[in-house]
Structures are given as structure tokens and as C-alpha cells.
Length: 394
Image 1 (cartoon, rainbow, N blue to C red):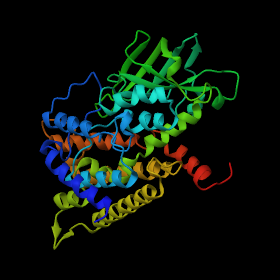
Image 2: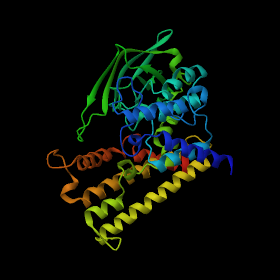
Image 3: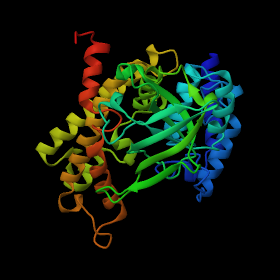
Image 4: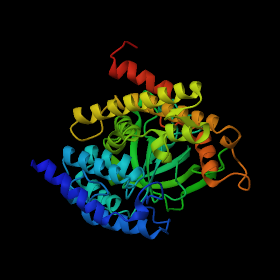
């Protein structure tokens, strides 16, 4: 038996013994925020056990709180977790975005100061990118940071800052030079959210939730040691972080189609709502739609796995834009298909007349309308694919 197979067998046994029943299947996942108390005992126990193993961030070096796993071991762990339907013990912008970015581009002091706290679920992060006048054209941002000796003074506004109301820290793109081409005067900084100069105002969405916020900065402070990369060279750092956001290793291995997130597949939904005869979905038109979705989903997974196998264990480069475009369109296709198959039960908004599962599907259908816009619109992603992946001329 190979060393990798030994690792897989040992991992499978450990997971079966240590992953609580309540941490398997859909359910809450910790994000590390100091402002959120974990109520579910199994979720908390699972988090504590995985922190002890270093498996909240399995492929990070052990000196930063990670598990020190190589690519093949990490993939094996994720596959074994998926086999048990074990939820991630920790998720959020810390593990998926700023953490991997600091691993690549941060100083050693920044890594030692921030990464262990992320790995040990002691901090949650939010993203300060978009502004009212700088969304898809992010380089037009106007929030400024002025040099004030040992720190920067930040003034301006960000919008659509997911989770800012519960975040402890923010990573932010700011304008530090107004006299150069717009991409060249941007810097990437880290700043604590709990300070007098930061004001967060929630934005209520059509889905009824308020995950997004407006964030205002009035003489907010970022220390000089929390400048990531060079001054005025933050655009490079910001772009790399977006690649981590669009497709981290976990989603590449485990898949990111909406059906998996919901815990129910399109075939099961069709059988429940449309009926079946001899194992075939009764409605031929929907049968073809479900088949097309499932085939496209499998193709998408194979493309993700190929990217993993060709990588060195980290997030791939511009190819992540392919996953953003195709993955978000798959999510929209899935929820559009499911809501239509359910008929009048597919668009519930009344808690009295509809079950919580039906209401959640409606929320997801509404939420994923925005999936092809946030994290860089699919139109922007297609431009990246044309230029950076296919090498087409401007």
C-alpha cells in the first residue's frame, strides 16, 4: 500500500470517529467571527477537533496553524470529507481569500500575525473592493489612504461589503496616488473594523436577507505594517486575491454546483415533483433538461479536477474565471429548473403556506440571480478568459 493510500485510510478512520453526526450534511459552518457565538454543539465540537489537527486550513504550513498537507494528501482529505458529507469546519474570507493571498504575497511578519488567528477561528474578514462608482470597473475606486507617518488615514466608502457587520478585519483596496494611471495608484491594506472611523450600514436584499453592507471610512486607520505588497502596486495583489475568491482548492475538488450546496440533486427533485416510471422521469421535456444539467455539471467537475491535477496545490491563475462564469450559470440553471418543476410550490414567500425547505429554495433562486454579477461580472470574466487564457488581442 502506498503512503498516500495509508494516509487516506487513516484519514477516513479519523473522520468517521471524530466528525459528529450534526456536522454532516447541510448545516451551519463557523466563520471565525468574534461577534458570532456558535450555538450548535456539534458544529463547535467539529471546529475544535479540526483546529487541533490543523485541518481548518489543511494545506497551510504548520507554523501558521495549518496541517502542512501536500496537494495529494489535501485532495484525499477533501474527498474523504465529501464521502461522509462532512461540512467544512471553518469557512469565510479568511480561509478562502486573504489567507491564501498572504501566504503568497505577505511578509513573514504579516503571516505570523494574521494566519494563525484565521486558522484557529479567532477572526473573520470582509472585503473592501466595490464602491458606488467603482463596481465592474474596480480600478476607478476613489477611497483614499493618506500617509501619516506610521499609519495611513483612510476616507471614502465601500459597498456590497459582505459580512462587514460581523467582521473583525477588512482587506481593502485604496487610492494612494491620484496622479498616475488608475491601475498604478492603488494599494492593498488590512485594517481592523472595530475602530471609531468605520461605520457599517446593512443593505436589505429582495431575498429578505442582509448579507451586504455599505461601509464608510472617516479617518480610519491602517498601520504601515498592514500594507500588503508595495505602495501603489496593490492592483496585482487585489487581482490575485480575486482568483482565490473565484475558485479555491476546496471548491475545485468538492465541486460547487448549486445542487450540492442545497443538499438535493436535480434528479431527486424531478422524481419527487414530476414522478417516475421504471426509473425514468415522467415528463420528457423536463427529463431532457435535467439530463442536460447533470451532464454539464459532471463536465464542470471534471474541468475542476483537471485544474487541481495541473496545479501545484494552490489556486490556479486566470483559468479560475472559467469556473466563475460556468459555475454561476450552472447555479442559476439549477434553481430555475427546480422552481419550475415545483410549480406553485416553487416560489414560496409565506412562512404559513410553505415549508422552510421551499422558502429556502426561493431565497436561493433570488440570491443566485446576482451570482453572475458579484465577484466580477461574467462579462468581465469573459474578457479575462479572452485575454489571459486564450491570448486573444485587446
